Length: 226
Image (cartoon, rainbow, N blue to C red; front, side, top):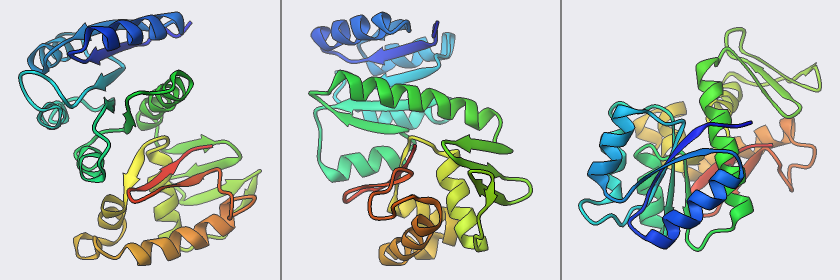
């Protein structure tokens, strides 16, 4: 049984009810909040395993709630919102959202994203050795294997792979990846990133043209999964 607790933050009663029924039928515990303030108090009193957060809250923007939660809450936060413009999506991801889904949502996709986000929580608790699908990444020895065969990666390729692996299931924006791997001065060099992603795909994917690990999120960045 799952019994992971999820805090749902949304001011629409119908959405709250739908999410509650869906999550409880998949064996999750559910807590509900209708405002940003209520969400912050609930999360502080009983930190959940995951938070599903709407951006359009009645008392304050979900972007502000996200930033304030990220000052202390280090587990996954999934944004679920009707807002689907690229600027808001990138802003939320850069401010610490684990994932971003738009309404109306497909139940199966939401559940898959939730499972991935919860797995990511456990990965962060033990980051020294990460196993995802056929890949095994040893952070300490800086080695990576696929089907138990050592991959020949450059230092930058390993850094990129380990960043993706430590953020399994999360959409990482171009700017975030560039800053983490190459520094602030490279945050606009998206073509530079595409080249390295291309070479890394050739080494870890069965078919680089149809990647199952490094998936492109058009106009935003990349998601790492299996």
